[in-house]
Image (cartoon, rainbow, N blue to C red; front, side, top):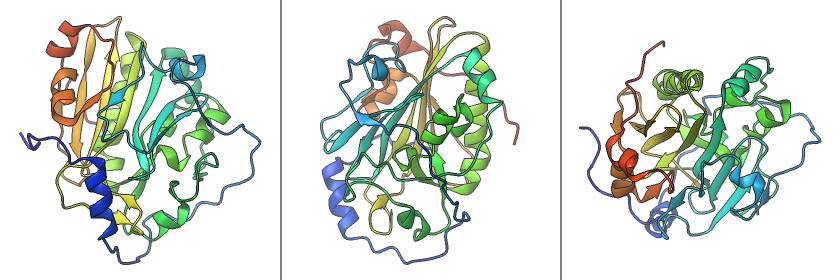
Length: 280
């Protein structure tokens, strides 16, 4: 197994590490995208029990250890919900509910790279376009994938930097894209609840512009209640093209994140997600 069998350092320690990192400026891998003006309402901090927030989860919202949830903000968008960290300046998780109808509608959307900072976050906590331009050869990786956006508003919101992490381009465009495609196919059997986010494992962490932490790994947790499918894909944020399939219970024990707190215990401890069929 490639995964270290230990929990990531507390987010408070990450903040200390971040303060000591000096990332040299270099040309960003992606071309600068020009964002046009839009009139969509911005995400707002919300009560986890509100209908807008609950729509993307099968029960209670995902939860994390107290150290991970320090200085976080819950952001409810039209098609996903994010728990954003003002320390790592990335989401801890982004949650969405996928259905066959939503995936069919998403195929008709025109996608523009309209990356933008979330205006509901304070400038000191929000990631910025300048952070990503200064950080080297990383893609701006969506946690709730832009390919899941079923409306113009939903697609635009998925380009919020509150839904983005620095991602290795080979990982983003090949293995991770295949994982996203495999999860969409599951909607032919059941609605699928998905929770996606970064992991920061160990003490050798780097940051873009001394502000945005680069994940060591990414995870995608799935729960298809009508098909009895559940589990978590965990993959290094590198060109290695490897991944591990964990049960929900194993993932919680190792990383302190509970994607689906109300999931039946027998499914959480026994089910692993399907092997990934490769296309890229």
